[in-house]
Every structure is written in structure tokens, then in C-alpha cells.
Amino acid sequence: MAQHNYKHGHTANRKTSSIFAIYSALKRRCNNPNDAAYDRYGGRGIEVCERWMEKDTGFINFFEDMGDRPSKNHSLDRIDNEKGYSSENCRWATAKEQANNRRSNHILEFDGKKMNVSQWAKDLNLSVSTIFQRIKKGYSIEEILLKGRVHRKSDERIITYKDKTQGLAKWVKELGIPRSTITNRLDRGMSIEEALSKTNYGTNNSRTTTNSNR
Image (tube, rainbow, N blue to C red; front, side, top):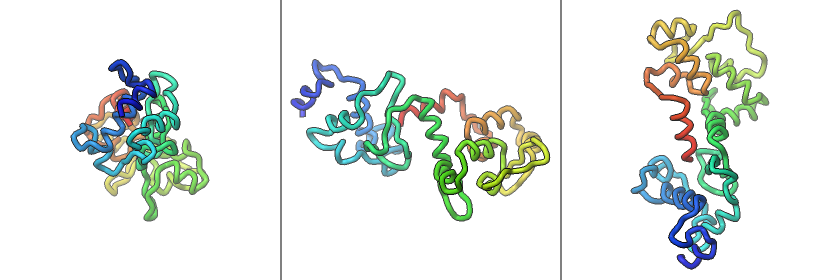
């Protein structure tokens, strides 16, 4: 194995290139139960494709498929977070692009079906942005996935949470959470459950950092 590493030049002179470090890390979190991130990857069935796991040429194959990362601001992103690492499901993306990808994988359940926003948009011939705007406004799941235009008598957000539907102002009073906190959470693509939780989710930066480690 050492001979092949020397040939591809990414571990020469006891130095490891950033892309080889990325490759090594993705293998560890999918295959090593002792890795700190294993539970979120290998522990839930995320695997590395056979081509990238080949004993002598795995890294070479990975590098041929993905190329070098475009900049230090790019990291490896899985397009579908429920699938593993392969050339078909991976891309180099910035933290912002990864955050948008995570938003698109927001799961909605309706009429016995569970799909992410991108899948619902395709299934119903709606735009992704339309669905997210409806989520942000606190529409019910029926209104979110309605094909036509949603009409409301006022701009007050109507939110259904734990089988109870009422305006945002009443939720603010009932839960003791500032209106700005709830609206900011919804604007960041959080679910209704997250937006109305008293848990402190931290800043946008903390959530973005998590996304960049995919």
C-alpha cells in the first residue's frame, strides 16, 4: 500500500495532502466503530462504494472520480444524505451549498408518504422555493403541498403543532419564545417542531459547521 501512496504523491515525505486526509476520514467514519462520527455514518448504514474501498487503488479511484477540491472552502458533500459515498452521490460544495442541500432534504409526511422537499416538488410539479416559503409562513401540511395558490386573509402565520392550530402570536404567548426567534428558525428552514422548541439550537454558524462535515 505504501508504494501506491508514493505513486499518487499524496502521502510523500511523511506529509498528507488535504484531499487524502478527506478520503481517509470518510473511510474511518464509515468503517471504524471507534471513530467519533461512526454513529452518524457507518452506524446508520452509510457506506463507501467498493471502487473507493479497493485495497490498492481506492484513493486513486476516488481522486479520478472527484478530482481535487476546487478551493479550501469546498468539502465533500453527499447529495442524498441517506445514501453513501460514491461518485454518483458526491460533489465538492461550499458550506452554503451544503446548507441548501440539507434544506432540500427536509422530510415532509403527507397522505401516508414520506419524501424530502425536492421529491415533493418533483412529484407535485411545484418549485422547491414555493414549498419552503409555505413552510416558513407556518402553513399546514395540506397547504404546503397544495398545487394551487394558497389564499389567506392576513399575513399572520398559522402554525399547527402537536395537533393544535393557532396564530404565531398565540404560540409566542403560550410558549414564551420570542416571535423573532420562531420566525428566524422558520426562515432558516427548521421544522415546526424545531422552531417551537425551547431548545437553544445556537447560531447559523454552528449549524453550518455540522453540515460541512458530511
